[in-house]
Image (cartoon, rainbow, N blue to C red; front, side, top):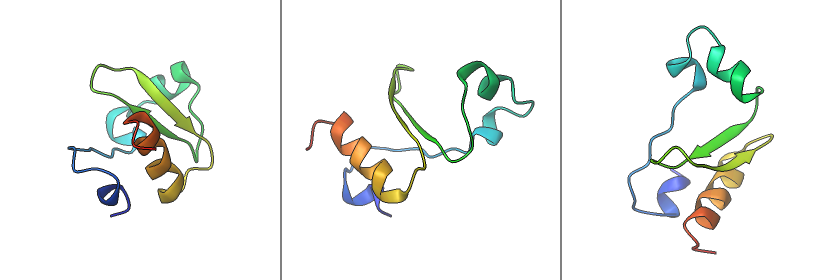
Length: 68
């Protein structure tokens, strides 16, 4: 809901476990619990947000879209 207030662009939120059943991707990326990764459709990592909250993720989305 917070992200919907930032943009009307299509967004997808996924838990890493949904796409990384055996943990290989998390290990390769160095992802840790509590982080949020903002990944563009072209696979560019736009942001890594430690201790992510809905507000901090919304701020990162806004910055990546140059809305703020």
